[in-house]
Image (cartoon, rainbow, N blue to C red; front, side, top):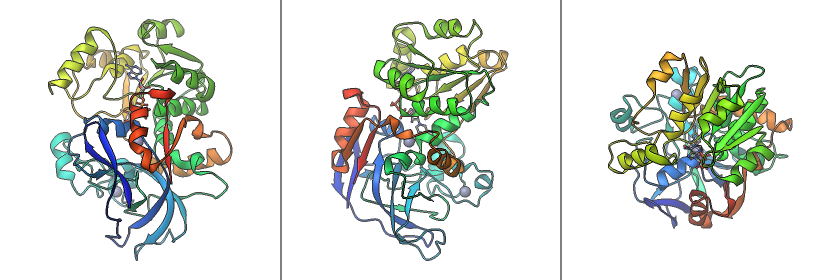
Length: 390
Ligand code: NAD
Ligand code: ZN
Ligand code: ZN
């Protein structure tokens, strides 16, 4: 089959690779009809995630048709059309029983690698390094899906691929980012990053009743989409104004009730702090650039919540612990527990409360994946989200 493979930092290539096979009785093989490139893939692309190997098949946002099932699979049959959550979860361990699917204790065969870096291992993730299981991803024609009775959700035929594809990751992720804010009537939520994840966090904050949602980015076209499509009430271009002051001004001096970091470890910035982080990251003295995170913590109102859905990999510097502690802030975070949100969010799509496909700007073929990465990573041609269809 054809698959988009990681070759080396900043290089991916579509290659011939062996077809996946059923390895365990609870596996299924899915023929992919649509797949997408995620901001998390950019961290792999840019070489910030260790334990990637030449030839690894990328991709963790995918859906398609079941073409084969293992002997113990009960909930799926050949021919079913499914969306597949990006974290791989067994559904039975202590974490899965608490619906903490992205920290499943049974799905990462390389847990020892993650334990070295993080103390304990989270779940395995499709197409996301050997440290997170070494699973082949879904930017491919076919994929092996373990625990097939647990993750995949059948989707109704009247909904298009584009309407349901983002149930695999960015819609639940944005939604969880907003849910962690415990939004109350009248709340003001600020969202750093107007990428696809930020857009769906903004839209979700609206669904959950936020009175105002403020989007922060430097790309005007992304801020425009945040206002016109996601429902942001205000936008801040951080290259034009001081974010802290602008947020204080918009909130009577108090700061937003909750702040969502939808940027993660590759934050961009300007001035001394950005130069500091970029240099330390290049010298491997710090793994991540927490520019948006620092700003989110400092901007948040006293007693408010900072919700981190942007991905971090390792260690950060100059973390404003004093601001967090002295002002009674709550910090919440996690890779999304996608399985938890599949049904309720599918229901919202079916009811017409939201159509997450508004983030799509580029539709391409799997063969064009390298060009898709180039557009997305460089924010060329007003790129917001690339979908690769079969
Ligand atoms: P993206 O790269 O398109 O979006 C990031 C946005 O942040 C860009 O628009 C960029 O201009 C903006 N940005 C950079 N520095 C900023 C700063 N200092 N202040 C404000 N904005 C800034 O990627 P995406 O697909 O939207 O993903 C965003 C993050 O979410 C990534 O870190 C990704 O890994 C993460 N993610 C997490 C989960 C999860 O389960 N927690 C799931 C999917 C993606
Ligand atoms: Zn993702
Ligand atoms: Zn589990």
